[in-house]
Image (tube, rainbow, N blue to C red; front, side, top):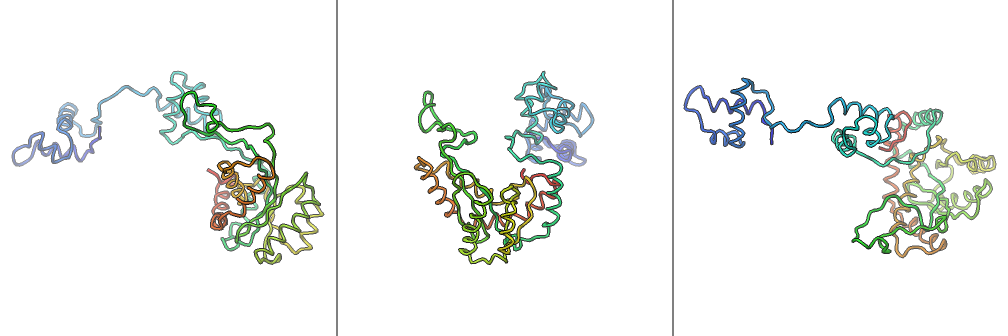
Amino acid sequence: MTRLSTAKRQKILDLYQPVNGEPLSLSDIARHVHCDRSTVRRVLQRVSSSGKLDYDIRPKGRPRILSKQDLRELVLAIDRGRALNATDAQRQLTPHASARTVRRRLAEIGLPGWVRRRKPLLKKSSLAQRRVWVKDVEGWGVKHWQLVVFSDESQFSLFPTPGRQWCRRRKGEAHFARNIIPRVTGGGGKVTVWGCITSRGVGRLHRIEGTMDAKMYRHILEDSLLGTLHDHRLCPSTIIFQHDNDPKHTARLVQEWLEHQNLLVLPWPPSSPDLNIIENVWAEIKKRLETYRPRPRNTEELWRVVQKLWYGMDKSFIQGLYRSLPGRVKTVKARKGLSGDS
């Protein structure tokens, strides 16, 4: 039932007890005020009994099982980390209410349930370095970021372990091929790659065979990084190269090679995949792999499919990632070094 404003209640009284003229019937008043006749009668009865216009005309129902104090304690427990989730908070603080009721009430006040995200552990020292890094680059616009070539390694499995997936099926169809997620011990075979992206599109994709060390990484840079710059007609002295702080990347052998090539390296804060936009490219490829048909049957087929998806990546998608960088930096600064994800 709609709650009437005080102004509308006053109008009902004015029409029922006019200073001049005859009072209107309840039906006429209802038409003037745009409400039900029963609402007009209830307003008049309430005003007559209470003498006030400011009241709630909605009928009183059963009081909520969770009081405002209960709700405050639940929110406090979640905000301070004393409760893992709504069910845990209900068990600790409000055993008189069901977990379903607690979840519903928390959602009503802006605390719906979300799946926890897996993120790198950010120590205090890492947060401090991220804040310093953000301060150094916060003045960069999109054109400045477009000078950066982002790089990283990633791994793709024949049978990856996806998150929760839903399907529609009838009773007795649980084991149909379309309703299961194939799983093989060890992932059924993997392909490890190194790649880089530029503001002009993706660079060369290099398959990593065996365990990569500093010597192999230098070879990858000689072949695939310089090859990428050649493909996109970029001069090494005009770009900024980004890679993370993996020991293979920071080895003296690699550092000397980068200096010899006159490549300017972007200092990178620790534990910061959220700021490396190539991570979004890897995630997009893995997302497309889940629905790719026919499914790769071995690592050679998987490598061919990964290459197809990589080189088929839309340039507008890459350019959108570059445009997102000033906003990412701004968000991390506002969160004092924490991840920019919601």
